[in-house]
Length: 283
Image (cartoon, rainbow, N blue to C red; front, side, top):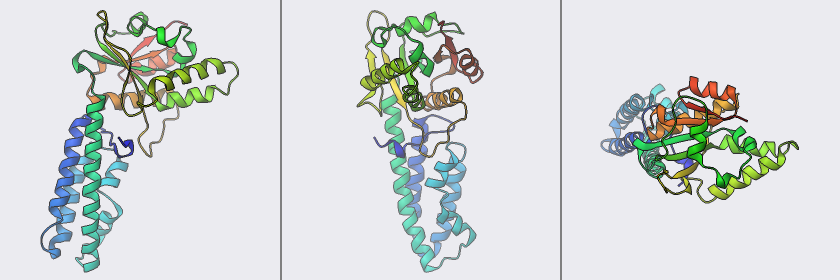
């Protein structure tokens, strides 16, 4: 799956957005028919309709890429149905229809691949970057359900639930940076190596760390990339939380089923103020 075509919704779920994008692509194909002299009016009507439908659902950059392109705004400024304009609009609508349908297919596939085993009884867990450095036990031997239950904070996931560990790509970038610091180099390098062993070959889907067994739900792990052209927050904890919230909303997981596992009190406060359930561990 080419994640560059994925569209992250700013409201609603990924599955819902996929349907809207597909409808917009079909509308572009339908509008690209009929008498040439009506092409400009059909194109502008299509663009106006899609901007209205999508402007609250997607980022401005995605709206500009998929609908409100330079050609759209040029036509708004000069709607004269000259032959060159009509030809350019026809080519534009073929391209935009294809781009919208590709975005719809990629977004729908991501919603399918990333779906939790049981949305009602599954939880997301943002693993803060400091966790990988502070943790003394082997990552492969961790009882993740017990670890989350032992942390301080409101609520915790039931042991029978699937846990999806969320690792934003910024967390991996932070570990790579830490490998240049002598005081934490061995731990950072070991954590990065373990993450690569779990996620290599599964960069576009969750990987299973441990299956459902003995009354404990399965534990899966997923790498979450930045959207193309994304500008990161200036505070890394805020960025990690933002990407997890975007992932949570994409799947439609309730707030009370989304946790942050951290050793950092400041990160726990930030998580709680943004609607995540912090699980603060003792060093």
